[in-house]
Amino acid sequence: MSAAFEHFDGHSSLVVRWMPPEAARAHVLFVPAFGDEMNQTRRMVRLTAEALVERSIASTVFDPHGTGDSSAGFAEATVERWLADFAAVLERMRADRDAPIVLCACRLGVALAAELTHRVPDASIEALVGWAPVLQGRAQLSALQRAAKIAAGRRPGAERVDAKAEWTSGRIAFLGGYPISPALAEQLDRLDATAAPRVRAATLIDVRPPAAEGTVLPSEALRSRARAWQESGVAVEVLVVEGAPFWNVPDLVDLPSLVEATAGAVERHVRESRS
Image (cartoon, rainbow, N blue to C red; front, side, top):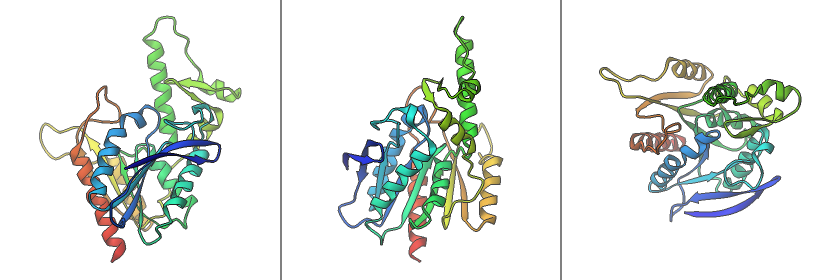
Protein backbone atom coordinates (compact mmCIF):
# COMPACT_ATOMS: atom_id res chain seq x y z
CA MET A 1 0.00 0.00 0.00
CA SER A 2 1.20 3.53 -0.77
CA ALA A 3 -0.30 6.88 0.16
CA ALA A 4 0.65 10.32 -1.12
CA PHE A 5 -0.96 13.69 -1.79
CA GLU A 6 -1.48 14.29 -5.49
CA HIS A 7 -2.46 17.48 -7.30
CA PHE A 8 -5.82 17.94 -9.01
CA ASP A 9 -7.46 20.96 -10.58
CA GLY A 10 -7.92 23.38 -7.69
CA HIS A 11 -6.86 21.14 -4.81
CA SER A 12 -4.68 18.31 -3.56
CA SER A 13 -5.93 15.04 -2.12
CA LEU A 14 -4.53 11.94 -0.49
CA VAL A 15 -4.48 9.03 -2.95
CA VAL A 16 -4.10 5.53 -1.52
CA ARG A 17 -3.09 2.66 -3.78
CA TRP A 18 -2.85 -1.08 -3.20
CA MET A 19 -0.52 -2.64 -5.77
CA PRO A 20 0.38 -6.34 -6.07
CA PRO A 21 4.10 -7.21 -6.26
CA GLU A 22 3.57 -8.66 -9.73
CA ALA A 23 1.86 -7.06 -12.70
CA ALA A 24 -1.74 -6.14 -11.85
CA ARG A 25 -4.41 -8.24 -13.56
CA ALA A 26 -6.82 -5.30 -13.31
CA HIS A 27 -7.26 -1.91 -11.66
CA VAL A 28 -10.21 -0.98 -9.43
CA LEU A 29 -11.14 2.64 -8.76
CA PHE A 30 -13.37 3.15 -5.72
CA VAL A 31 -16.03 5.85 -6.05
CA PRO A 32 -17.12 6.82 -2.52
CA ALA A 33 -20.45 7.46 -0.87
CA PHE A 34 -21.63 10.96 0.06
CA GLY A 35 -20.98 12.88 3.29
CA ASP A 36 -20.95 10.92 6.53
CA GLU A 37 -21.62 7.74 4.55
CA MET A 38 -18.18 8.14 3.00
CA ASN A 39 -16.56 8.08 6.44
CA GLN A 40 -18.66 5.14 7.63
CA THR A 41 -17.69 3.03 4.61
CA ARG A 42 -13.92 3.60 4.67
CA ARG A 43 -13.20 0.41 6.56
CA MET A 44 -15.22 -1.74 4.15
CA VAL A 45 -13.41 -0.11 1.23
CA ARG A 46 -10.05 -0.91 2.82
CA LEU A 47 -11.01 -4.52 3.54
CA THR A 48 -12.15 -4.94 -0.06
CA ALA A 49 -8.99 -3.37 -1.47
CA GLU A 50 -6.90 -5.74 0.66
CA ALA A 51 -8.91 -8.72 -0.59
CA LEU A 52 -8.47 -7.61 -4.19
CA VAL A 53 -4.71 -7.08 -3.98
CA GLU A 54 -4.38 -10.65 -2.71
CA ARG A 55 -5.90 -11.62 -6.05
CA SER A 56 -3.32 -9.49 -7.93
CA ILE A 57 -5.88 -6.75 -8.58
CA ALA A 58 -4.77 -3.18 -7.84
CA SER A 59 -7.02 -0.62 -6.14
CA THR A 60 -7.07 3.16 -5.91
CA VAL A 61 -8.95 5.19 -3.28
CA PHE A 62 -9.04 8.97 -2.89
CA ASP A 63 -11.27 11.80 -1.70
CA PRO A 64 -12.59 14.05 -4.49
CA HIS A 65 -12.80 17.83 -4.40
CA GLY A 66 -13.84 19.24 -1.02
CA THR A 67 -14.32 15.90 0.76
CA GLY A 68 -12.26 14.02 3.33
CA ASP A 69 -8.54 14.71 2.90
CA SER A 70 -8.99 17.10 -0.01
CA SER A 71 -7.35 20.50 0.60
CA ALA A 72 -10.49 22.23 -0.71
CA GLY A 73 -13.52 23.02 1.43
CA PHE A 74 -16.83 21.20 1.04
CA ALA A 75 -18.54 24.48 0.13
CA GLU A 76 -16.53 24.33 -3.13
CA ALA A 77 -17.61 20.78 -3.96
CA THR A 78 -19.72 20.07 -7.02
CA VAL A 79 -20.63 16.96 -8.97
CA GLU A 80 -18.73 18.32 -11.96
CA ARG A 81 -15.56 18.78 -9.92
CA TRP A 82 -15.88 15.26 -8.52
CA LEU A 83 -16.27 13.79 -11.99
CA ALA A 84 -13.25 15.75 -13.21
CA ASP A 85 -11.16 14.35 -10.35
CA PHE A 86 -12.21 10.77 -11.10
CA ALA A 87 -11.43 11.30 -14.78
CA ALA A 88 -7.96 12.55 -13.82
CA VAL A 89 -7.28 9.47 -11.70
CA LEU A 90 -8.49 7.20 -14.50
CA GLU A 91 -6.02 8.87 -16.85
CA ARG A 92 -3.21 8.14 -14.40
CA MET A 93 -4.36 4.54 -14.03
CA ARG A 94 -4.38 4.01 -17.78
CA ALA A 95 -0.58 3.95 -17.85
CA ASP A 96 -1.06 0.18 -17.61
CA ARG A 97 -3.22 -0.10 -20.71
CA ASP A 98 -3.25 -3.90 -20.78
CA ALA A 99 -5.14 -4.20 -17.50
CA PRO A 100 -8.94 -3.68 -17.49
CA ILE A 101 -10.47 -1.07 -15.20
CA VAL A 102 -13.41 -1.78 -12.89
CA LEU A 103 -15.30 0.87 -10.92
CA CYS A 104 -16.40 -0.12 -7.41
CA ALA A 105 -18.88 2.39 -6.03
CA CYS A 106 -20.91 2.79 -2.86
CA ARG A 107 -24.33 4.44 -2.43
CA LEU A 108 -24.42 7.77 -4.32
CA GLY A 109 -21.05 6.81 -5.75
CA VAL A 110 -22.90 4.34 -8.01
CA ALA A 111 -24.73 7.20 -9.73
CA LEU A 112 -21.45 9.12 -10.01
CA ALA A 113 -19.68 6.07 -11.45
CA ALA A 114 -22.42 5.50 -14.01
CA GLU A 115 -22.18 9.13 -15.12
CA LEU A 116 -18.39 8.88 -15.22
CA THR A 117 -18.54 6.11 -17.81
CA HIS A 118 -20.32 8.53 -20.16
CA ARG A 119 -17.82 11.34 -19.50
CA VAL A 120 -14.73 9.22 -20.25
CA PRO A 121 -15.89 6.72 -22.89
CA ASP A 122 -12.28 6.10 -23.95
CA ALA A 123 -11.12 5.09 -20.47
CA SER A 124 -11.58 1.34 -21.15
CA ILE A 125 -13.82 0.85 -18.11
CA GLU A 126 -14.78 -2.80 -18.23
CA ALA A 127 -17.38 -3.07 -15.47
CA LEU A 128 -19.14 -1.42 -12.55
CA VAL A 129 -19.74 -2.98 -9.12
CA GLY A 130 -22.21 -1.04 -6.96
CA TRP A 131 -22.91 -1.36 -3.23
CA ALA A 132 -26.41 -0.46 -1.98
CA PRO A 133 -26.90 1.90 -4.92
CA VAL A 134 -28.40 5.37 -4.67
CA LEU A 135 -29.09 6.06 -8.33
CA GLN A 136 -30.53 9.58 -8.16
CA GLY A 137 -28.85 12.61 -6.64
CA ARG A 138 -32.18 14.12 -5.67
CA ALA A 139 -32.78 11.12 -3.39
CA GLN A 140 -29.56 11.94 -1.52
CA LEU A 141 -30.53 15.60 -1.35
CA SER A 142 -34.00 14.77 -0.02
CA ALA A 143 -32.50 12.50 2.63
CA LEU A 144 -30.24 15.33 3.81
CA GLN A 145 -33.17 17.72 4.04
CA ARG A 146 -35.30 15.20 5.95
CA ALA A 147 -32.46 14.49 8.38
CA ALA A 148 -31.91 18.21 8.97
CA LYS A 149 -35.63 18.74 9.62
CA ILE A 150 -35.75 15.84 12.09
CA ALA A 151 -32.63 17.05 13.88
CA ALA A 152 -34.06 20.58 14.20
CA GLY A 153 -37.31 19.16 15.60
CA ARG A 154 -35.38 17.45 18.38
CA ARG A 155 -33.80 20.73 19.54
CA PRO A 156 -36.33 23.14 21.10
CA GLY A 157 -35.91 26.60 19.66
CA ALA A 158 -33.61 25.45 16.87
CA GLU A 159 -33.91 27.44 13.67
CA ARG A 160 -35.17 25.40 10.76
CA VAL A 161 -33.32 25.87 7.53
CA ASP A 162 -35.29 26.32 4.32
CA ALA A 163 -32.61 24.91 2.06
CA LYS A 164 -34.46 25.58 -1.18
CA ALA A 165 -34.97 29.23 -0.25
CA GLU A 166 -31.27 29.56 0.59
CA TRP A 167 -30.23 28.04 -2.73
CA THR A 168 -32.70 30.18 -4.67
CA SER A 169 -31.11 33.23 -3.06
CA GLY A 170 -27.65 32.01 -4.04
CA ARG A 171 -26.62 31.12 -0.49
CA ILE A 172 -25.15 27.97 1.04
CA ALA A 173 -27.46 25.80 3.16
CA PHE A 174 -26.01 23.72 5.99
CA LEU A 175 -27.50 20.23 6.05
CA GLY A 176 -26.18 17.63 8.46
CA GLY A 177 -23.17 19.83 9.10
CA TYR A 178 -22.29 20.06 5.39
CA PRO A 179 -22.32 23.39 3.51
CA ILE A 180 -24.32 22.57 0.38
CA SER A 181 -23.83 25.24 -2.27
CA PRO A 182 -26.53 26.15 -4.82
CA ALA A 183 -24.29 24.64 -7.55
CA LEU A 184 -23.92 21.32 -5.71
CA ALA A 185 -27.67 21.18 -4.97
CA GLU A 186 -28.53 21.83 -8.61
CA GLN A 187 -26.08 19.24 -9.92
CA LEU A 188 -27.18 16.62 -7.39
CA ASP A 189 -30.78 17.20 -8.43
CA ARG A 190 -29.81 16.48 -12.06
CA LEU A 191 -27.63 13.44 -11.31
CA ASP A 192 -29.58 10.38 -12.46
CA ALA A 193 -28.30 6.93 -13.42
CA THR A 194 -31.37 6.12 -15.49
CA ALA A 195 -29.17 5.71 -18.54
CA ALA A 196 -27.17 2.50 -18.44
CA PRO A 197 -23.44 2.97 -17.81
CA ARG A 198 -21.08 2.56 -20.76
CA VAL A 199 -19.61 -0.71 -19.56
CA ARG A 200 -19.78 -4.30 -20.71
CA ALA A 201 -21.10 -5.60 -17.40
CA ALA A 202 -22.32 -4.50 -13.98
CA THR A 203 -22.92 -6.11 -10.61
CA LEU A 204 -25.37 -4.38 -8.26
CA ILE A 205 -25.23 -5.59 -4.66
CA ASP A 206 -28.12 -4.84 -2.32
CA VAL A 207 -27.56 -4.96 1.45
CA ARG A 208 -30.65 -6.13 3.32
CA PRO A 209 -31.38 -7.03 6.96
CA PRO A 210 -31.54 -10.77 7.64
CA ALA A 211 -35.02 -12.24 7.36
CA ALA A 212 -36.62 -14.19 10.19
CA GLU A 213 -37.57 -16.80 7.62
CA GLY A 214 -37.43 -17.23 3.88
CA THR A 215 -34.99 -15.87 1.33
CA VAL A 216 -33.78 -12.28 1.35
CA LEU A 217 -34.25 -10.69 -2.07
CA PRO A 218 -32.88 -7.47 -3.58
CA SER A 219 -35.31 -4.56 -3.64
CA GLU A 220 -37.74 -4.40 -6.54
CA ALA A 221 -36.46 -0.90 -7.39
CA LEU A 222 -32.94 -2.26 -7.84
CA ARG A 223 -34.13 -5.23 -9.88
CA SER A 224 -36.16 -2.88 -12.07
CA ARG A 225 -33.14 -0.67 -12.75
CA ALA A 226 -31.05 -3.75 -13.51
CA ARG A 227 -33.61 -4.90 -16.08
CA ALA A 228 -33.51 -1.47 -17.73
CA TRP A 229 -29.73 -1.57 -17.95
CA GLN A 230 -29.90 -5.10 -19.29
CA GLU A 231 -32.25 -3.96 -22.05
CA SER A 232 -29.65 -1.32 -22.96
CA GLY A 233 -27.06 -4.01 -23.59
CA VAL A 234 -25.24 -4.21 -20.24
CA ALA A 235 -24.83 -7.67 -18.74
CA VAL A 236 -26.20 -7.04 -15.23
CA GLU A 237 -26.31 -9.31 -12.21
CA VAL A 238 -28.06 -8.37 -8.98
CA LEU A 239 -26.83 -9.87 -5.72
CA VAL A 240 -27.99 -9.49 -2.15
CA VAL A 241 -25.90 -9.55 1.01
CA GLU A 242 -27.50 -9.90 4.42
CA GLY A 243 -26.32 -7.44 7.03
CA ALA A 244 -26.67 -4.06 8.68
CA PRO A 245 -26.55 -0.85 6.62
CA PHE A 246 -22.84 -0.31 7.36
CA TRP A 247 -22.93 3.19 5.80
CA ASN A 248 -25.40 4.46 8.42
CA VAL A 249 -24.85 2.82 11.81
CA PRO A 250 -23.38 4.23 15.07
CA ASP A 251 -20.56 1.68 15.17
CA LEU A 252 -18.44 0.28 12.38
CA VAL A 253 -19.83 -2.94 10.94
CA ASP A 254 -17.84 -5.45 8.90
CA LEU A 255 -19.61 -7.44 6.21
CA PRO A 256 -17.17 -10.16 5.09
CA SER A 257 -19.83 -11.50 2.74
CA LEU A 258 -19.88 -8.16 0.88
CA VAL A 259 -16.10 -8.20 0.55
CA GLU A 260 -16.23 -11.73 -0.85
CA ALA A 261 -19.13 -10.93 -3.19
CA THR A 262 -17.30 -7.88 -4.51
CA ALA A 263 -13.99 -9.68 -5.00
CA GLY A 264 -15.83 -12.50 -6.76
CA ALA A 265 -17.67 -10.09 -9.05
CA VAL A 266 -14.47 -8.25 -9.98
CA GLU A 267 -12.76 -11.59 -10.65
CA ARG A 268 -15.58 -12.62 -13.00
CA HIS A 269 -15.53 -9.32 -14.85
CA VAL A 270 -11.75 -9.49 -15.30
CA ARG A 271 -11.91 -13.09 -16.48
CA GLU A 272 -14.69 -12.35 -18.95
CA SER A 273 -12.82 -9.32 -20.29
CA ARG A 274 -9.99 -11.66 -21.25
CA SER A 275 -12.21 -14.17 -22.99
